[in-house]
Length: 494
Image (tube, rainbow, N blue to C red; front, side, top):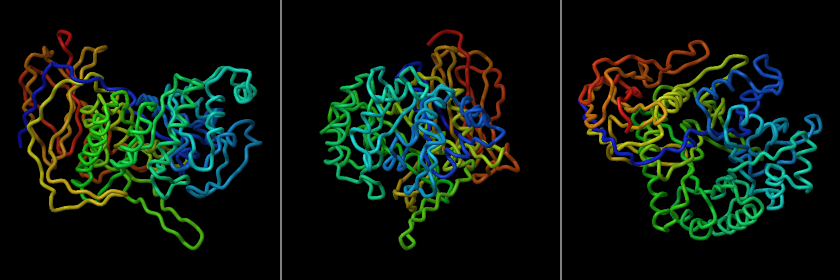
């Protein structure tokens, strides 16, 4: 199969670094035994696992969301500040187990500073109040002689944290959430919280709960859209069928475009989309046994197909760069994590390597691109994935994006080959002065379900090869089931 790709030197969008963000929640081993383990020899004096931290630094995490997620709906931030030995141990009745509160606001902010990420805090609309949200904002951002700013200083942090991003609630549209309410009820709470929080600190940016439901989202946007800065959307997918998993990319694109259409219809151009929970989640399930809630939260052993899904999501966000300007993979470590730990060992999954490929080898200016790819038909199949079921008639075998890096003066052509055979791409770069040598970075494997584990942690990893005799019209080979970024150095500026 041969595919034609044409790239024009027209700049059509600007990618926000925040689309490469991450999410950590008090769920399973994400926080404790994930990013934070006071007893591990791999940890520093603060309890931060150095190996995990170095891996996160490598992919330049721009923004980190915390503490939830569902967990935030019953979280009281004051339980997680002050001397560690005085913090209360509490039932984590959202996800099960005991919450030690040893990782709280100050630890989270310090972790963000260490990895050079913007902190993104979500406030509770469940068991908490507006007063608590205002006190948390004061604790984090104000330098006043008032109670909670003074409390921060007394806890050893004299300078304000200046947390910019604040989410008002989490998934309150769902009956699984403490604080579940209607769209109209949420919209009024959102208006109040945003009005008063921005009244205290006008510099903050507010993320509203979107439900991936046009009626809900329209109600929220009509009532509070003039005050907010982002509206969120959450998507979890995963299908036993290989093409089902990669087809999920295009379902996500449909839902993002639907939300974008609502924003444009209401002429709320200042509101951007925060894709602040997305991932593969094959084994999502919940059941009740008597009075106890048992939730099966297996740590997904992510495979090659999941890395290709992530690469496809990045291509979608590149296409929608003018609207989708924040995203947070859910989650970072262990529980749905792109990084796995076991004792003192660590494994980087194909999803992690997809981040490495796109963060470190693509630019931030989107160029005009056309891909003439064959498609595969999937109309006879319905994919049921977590909370969503959908049908798609056809999706492309080859997808991608073209970006320009102003600092390096390089053109990056990202091409994802979902086909289970090698593909030749006829690449037309007419009007772009490329040098004769380029580097092709490749993420691939021998089978869709091939994965890294603790016995073989590097089965799947990024490789690279040099391309010689490059020209404005050339042919590039894409390996079967591969995500590729070809970096061309340019002779002149675009």
